Length: 250
Image (tube, rainbow, N blue to C red; front, side):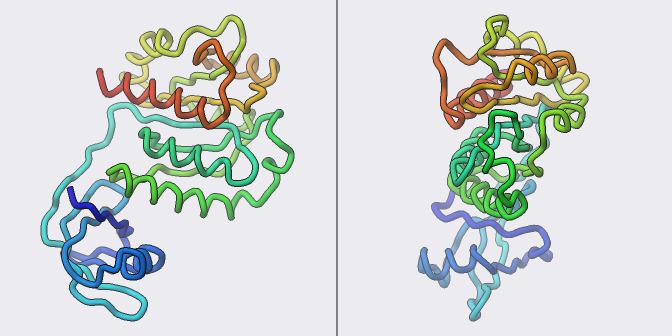
């Protein structure tokens, strides 16, 4: 694997040539100081190449794709991460962790206990930033396929959209079972029917009892992550690392 990995979207790839522009061009030329030589590029979907920087212009570079290094296959079970939306840039770290831990879809969940600012502040502009965060995380961790980042959604809108995925809701409710135990129960059906496992992670104050009850009524399985109260980012990383490792071991 090459040290330098750059993202080139599929629309910038034609045959064995690619166009590097925008932020990735700036990063390559002005940060890495690379105006020639060999780099690795990936399309964010399924392929990664060994490429040569053939020509550098003022606002873009032309790449020659020398060799297909890796072609990723579709997963047997997709991971849908639905962490509660946080205010400010705190959600950036959650997107970063979810990308590194293999989430295929990230849908920010708007819960009743989310901060009021987080529920209303420019979701479309924030999605653009989250996508850039996901690209950066994928470059660092060696991932090829970028996660799909969907618009934030309230829990009552989100739950119906997750069907037919097996849905897990992380909660401090006393009747919640350990995550790993529930995964062992739902994974066979998820692989055979749903092909997806969705994980709902609440805000630090947890989902409200009404939200948890509504999710369970809709078919979600209540799960717990441990005996302590976790920050939103820690809870997301904890839940997704368990799910990702469990699926990788099957």
